[in-house]
Structures are given as C-alpha cells and as structure tokens.
Amino acid sequence: MIDINNYEILIKAQCTLRETSISSHNGQFMTNSTLKVIGFDEVKNQHTKNWGLEGRKDIDKPASNDALYMNYKGDMYFIEFRSGKVEKTLPDLRRKIFESILILTDIIEKGITSIRLHLNYILVFDDSRSEILNKIEEKGKIDKLTYFEGLYFKKVHTISKSIFESNFVSVWESQST
Image 1 (cartoon, rainbow, N blue to C red):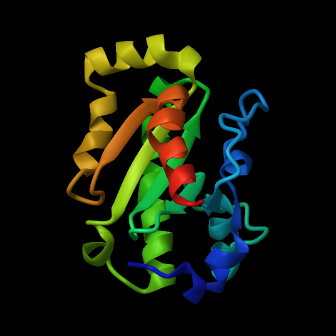
Image 2 (tube, rainbow, N blue to C red):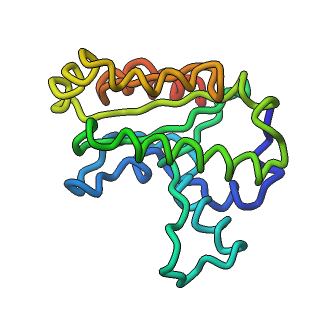
C-alpha cells in the first residue's frame, strides 16, 4: 500500500477527476466528479524536470495516463480518458501504460512486483464511441490491453463513461464521504 502523503510530487499533483478528464479532442469534460485524484500528467511533467528534458526537441517526452486514483483499501487505478478515435490509439495507450508505471515505480522506489496486486487500469471512452469500440472488440484489437492483466495490473477495464460513472465514480464518491 502506498501512502501518497510520503511523496510530495503526488501531493502537489492532486486535483479533481473532472480536471483530468478534459478532452483535447473536443474540450469537453468526460466526468464532472470532484473526487480527489492525482493528475498523472502533472506528476510526469514534474518528474521529468529532474531528468533534464525541459526544452529538448531531439527526444520525445514520456507519455502518461490522465489520472491515478487510490481508494481507502490501497487499490490504485490508472485512468485514461479517450473521446477521440480509440482504434488508432492502441500504441499510444500502451506507451502511456508503460511510461506511467515506470514513473510511478521510480517515484515510490518499488518494483512492479510490489504494486501489481493493487494496481488497476481503466480506459474510459466517450459513450458516442460505443459503436466504434464494439467493432474494435469484434476484431480483438482492444483485447491487446487485457494482456497487461496479471503482468502489470490486477484488472484492466475498457468501459464507456456512463459505466465508469455508475460502476466506479459513484462507488468511490460514496466511500470518500
């Protein structure tokens, strides 16, 4: 179990789930939840400052998931919001997964073995993309994310934002009060 209070970089990156859900595709928020999460894009930005990557144009900066949520039981959830074309972003999603895990394990100074049983992944897609996602699932492409289950994550979820709201956000909010 990770106590975020032991890591200044995680404390400083706290924000609302709503703030992490803004779409660069259309500028809309995918949730209005005020649940406290860690804005993992901000964690990545702060952490990479230590690596001397600022202003360098000769390399790609690391990618990251949108948010990291930790519940009262110590379970952690990397959350990635997608409102654009899901089927064209699978390599990007895998890169975000790998690099977010590397950043997190570097910060907490623990290996994947120590967090695998507590770390989950949720890909949240816009409800209007359900038809697209169904076609991708039929071709088995989205299942390529599920191979991370057991390897890096306890569980991998690929769900619409309405299911995310009802099955995760509402539960988390009720537990935080």
